[in-house]
Length: 173
Image (cartoon, rainbow, N blue to C red):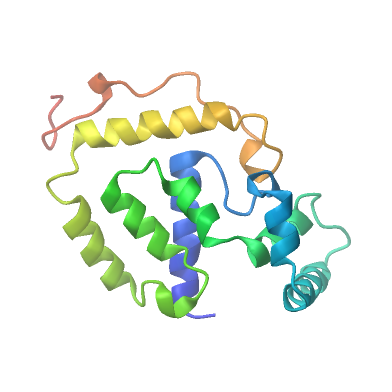
């Protein structure tokens, strides 16, 4: 546990906000990939994490064991598939945030901030933000039947439109 863990968690949150899908959702896994990924080492990791999660709790939520399993078995291909519809700068940033190996992630929040400014700077404006929102809502519509923590609420009844985005500070245009 170090600051890179927090940046990984931020990446998970950004991924879920943009896609309405969670990397740890068992519905994202292909059975053959899970079987291949469940090496003896991974099985030990899953068992130890489940025991640690149970420590101090009488019962875990139903999806907790599935999340633990996916945390131990998600692949780079899973990350690529979930982020493929992002704009290239955001895709690159989120992919780096959720690398399995801490040394392959952003090492500091300052490094992440620099990439966000460089990658999303002036080329990322209201039009691109609206495209990201539409992409996110489209993903949410496709994922509505996913069981797990991301499916507990419903989509908001009113969606964002071009009229909701301001392009000047304090302005309405």
